Image 1 (cartoon, rainbow, N blue to C red):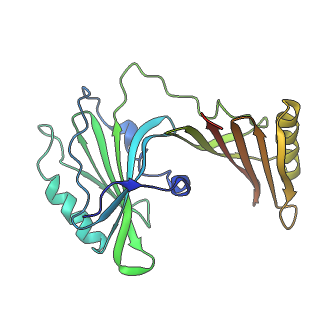
Image 2: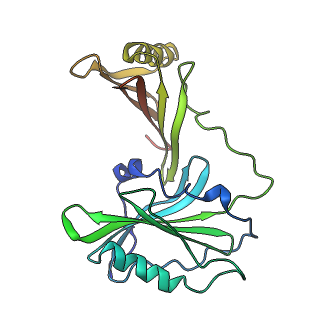
Length: 246
């Protein structure tokens, strides 16, 4: 079985969904070491990240690819998690509300184990997905304020924030929504970073006024910003990377 290869950074941006599902509806438990969480039999598995934070929830996330169908993968975890971890509690929970993803989760030893699986687009008989392990929150932990590390034009709303820590590099990817124009958003970030002495690597309109790309750099820090018009809203995707070495 192929197991635990290093995963490319580009795949991290596709993760938003499974880690937060049902998270705040679950009971609190005393933390122990992470329980055993096997991948589907015969699947190839690779790390997305061992220290990823999605909307304030810390997770270790692996990606898997299987020749098995979605139903075969789900049936494996139904058998694996059939015995409840706690008395009078279900062994697992399922959701089909996140189509095209099928999600099956389990609470064990103070952790949320989540399988997020969908059909393989290149081979309709196969499947792929993510395996995430997240500690449940303590009762005293405050809900984190999203987006505090990245500037936002007034009136912005943070849709999603993901942080990752890799050797020599820390990264934050944020999706922001507001009703300001693409031009006004671009001007806001241009003034902010240039005003702080950052070097502009890219500042250009893409095609029409519906999108704009900006890249700023300052010593070990690099920020890439994509501004996109989406019907009545403007979406801003900000990727900020801080390197510990040049």
